[in-house]
Image (cartoon, rainbow, N blue to C red):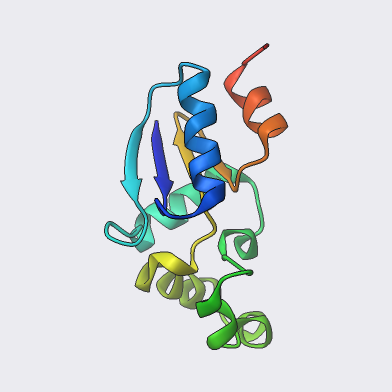
Amino acid sequence: MIFLCYPSCTTCQKAKRWLEANGVAFEERHIKDDRPSVEELKDWHQKSGLPLKKFFNTSGLLYRELNLKERLPAMSEEEQYRLLASNGMLVKRPLLVGDGFVLVGFKEADWKQRLFITK
């Protein structure tokens, strides 16, 4: 599995500790230094079953600076993918990419259910 995170993000830190505590093997990837490509984002979006808007870090400074709340509805999916791929700080984090699934953001109950963790 790939764990995409921003190391100084407290939610990412919490998710990483949770993965480690539950013995989940993962490869860590710094979302800002090694940002997702358009192709990866398209694949992950499809696997997630979520609306594309859920991949945007709506609480981030850059999201607000770019006025994306107003701009996104008028953008095509292709434009949104390119925008997400342009800067890792626009992408909601953490992301956990596994075989056939993608989890966006850290919700412990969802991660437990998806990873079949019973404790």
